[in-house]
Image (cartoon, rainbow, N blue to C red):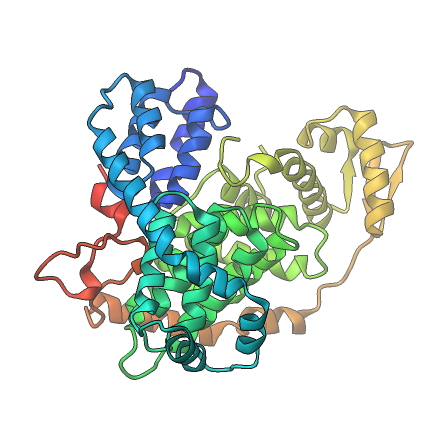
Amino acid sequence: MTGGSDDSIALQHDLTSKLGRSLDPHMLLMMLESHSSGTIAIFDRTSIMRAKADLLEKNTKMIDYLKEVREEIGDATDKYDAQKDEVIKELRTQSEFFEKLTDLFSDPEFQAQTRTMRASSQVLELLISTHGYEESIVDDIYKYAKFNYDIGNYELALEWLGRFIQLAPPNHSHSLDAVWGRLAAAICSEQFEVAHEAMVQLRDNIDQTSGREGGPSALQLLQQRTWLLHWSLFIFFNGLSRGKELLIELFLHNADYTHAIQTMAPWLLRYLTAAVVLSINSRKRKTIERDLVKIIEQEEYAYKDPITEFILCLYVKFDFQKNDFFLRNYTKEFIENARQIIFETFCRIHQCISISRLAEKLNMNEKEAERWIVNLIKNARLDAKIDTKRGHVVMSDHATNAHQQVIEKTKHLQFRTSLLSTFIDRRMGKEKGSDVPQWAMKDNRNKGKNNGERRSQWRSHQQ
């Protein structure tokens, strides 16, 4: 860790280890790269480089990248030459094997034929009957896509996973794995619109299996949703159109995913809170803030940080007294929106407010604060005026609608009852097993363990 009190605070609230438990190793590498490049400089560089080397060696086939990291640390790299030769040989063999199939999928006539086919079995039958392939080509395509992902060819992996999904029957053993893999490849290749499409497809797939006979247990569904929530952060905070609004919709307004946050990953409240503050101009902001405050207040015993505490201080306690991978580009916007929330909260609890006092709370001088407040009142059409002689902001009084208060306080009773029931079931041990995305797993599964007990790549090397 680097020196300084700011670094100490940042390290105290760093979520890399918590987030990493639910991320694919390649996504975790993206986070570690930010730490080691100095973008998020709160860890000792040597420690980060060793963590990257460990992750690369145990979970990828990116030998050149591994050698580069090891060389910077000062470790010997001769032993990786043989591994590199094996990877190059395998890549050459598979590329030659799939060269003909690549040309076929790129052929306009073949594309026109497949566009008229609705079932995957029809496309596969065309390959078998007309072009001489065997049914095993489906499994070969999956392995080829996974190999390309392992060596860091994310765009090619994304392309071939799409073809696998096109050919594989719905009951194929790797059908769900391929959807997870497509999402991972789209994220790692920074194709976030495509990643969002894959995320929606995966979410629908998970939700459709809920309650299905022979499907995953309630706990397994909870774990899958937890992974999806973590992976979605790469999408929502990387330039996706309406990304923060879509995050709020998934994290806050989808009961199953809100349940997953409260039960499995309360630290995700940081990103939900940030999204709400950054979406301050939303027409539904008042309702969104109320729902957010309820959840943060309920989960304060399990998780809190300066961002969630900010909301609680504003709306519950009324006490007005960087360094994150996903939020580092939103600092100025967050501060500006936070000032607006502080101002509006003051206005709700005080009818007459001193500009000098507001300036102190907003970290501005009086002239700047007055100019800022005038613009805010004008742009937001707040029912307020400034008394320049007394140096006060005066708010108009609004009567509270008691009927609306009753509706707001009782509309979530059914969901809370369902949530309590699930907690009781878990306490009594009625739900057993574990499930994580198989895309993020090693191929060599442990003997004597069922499918629900396989280790993810991240868990297998953690500490």
